[in-house]
Image (cartoon, rainbow, N blue to C red; front, side, top):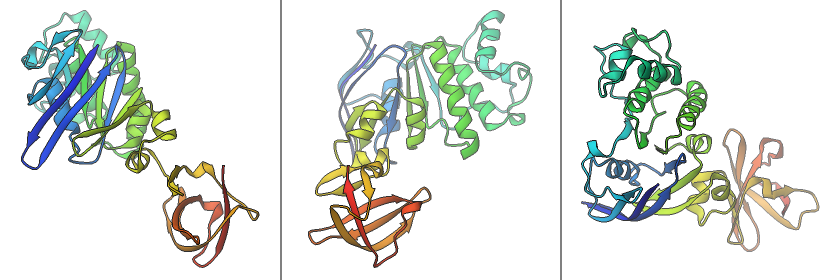
Amino acid sequence: MLQLKNIGKTYPGFNLSDITFNLEKGEILGLVGESGSGKSTLLRIIAGLEYSHSGSILFHQEDWTILEPQLRKIGFVFQDYALFPHLSVIENITIAASADSKKVEEIIQIVDLVGFQDKMIHQLSGGQQQRVAIARALMMNPNLMLLDEPFSNLDTMLKASVRKQIKQILKNNGCSSIIVTHDLEDAYEMADKIAILKHGKLIQLDTPQKLYSDPVNEYVAGMTGVYSVFKGQIIRPEDIEVTQNGKYKGVVKSRAFKGSHYQIHVELQEDVIKLNLGTWQVKNEGDYINFNIK
């Protein structure tokens, strides 16, 4: 449905280069990368809020490359939601598009805001404000939904429940969507496919499962989960079996608690490697450890 071909844009000190991918109808794509990787710039280029210096954007074979933003019919949910505090929920939702009462009622039900139509924005929780922003975008019957760091203003507990709600809304509406996030859990929870950006380049694009099981390099491995490197091979914690009869033996040089696991550095004769072990496998500095690679 959406095709990006060799999109590039240059700023002083930054270069977005040769971004190419397709987005299918109803598909949710997560754009993941560190701050300054080019995620939001790429989103704004797709929306028409910025123009690329090279490449093309096609939507159902229509050339969007220099098409004005308002002609693209894109629903854009900004990081801060961009709601009007002096207007009610219903006024915020309908401000950008006229619609009959039946359409408005339908959107209110979709985003689960029935009974909140006359509330002011400051009377809503963060999750409710987010749903108002999405309702306003859906009022346009958008060709495409773009969400820029939509969960960054929510606390951890609220974020987990809101992610599920928003994904269900997007899927029920059948709208193709692109979500920019720096949080891997957002992408894993929401996206059908994930694109990893680094310094303006697309490093890998695939399903979450494929990115985790077969990352192209250590950067992708680190962006998609806990990993270790052994003999030049990227391995996950579940690939490591600590056992007294393990094929490999080394001494623990350091360890650090990471919450769900300990990260330890093990010195073998040929190398110093990094292993990530569950808390039940804790080893102290100076201890020897035997392990196998599954």
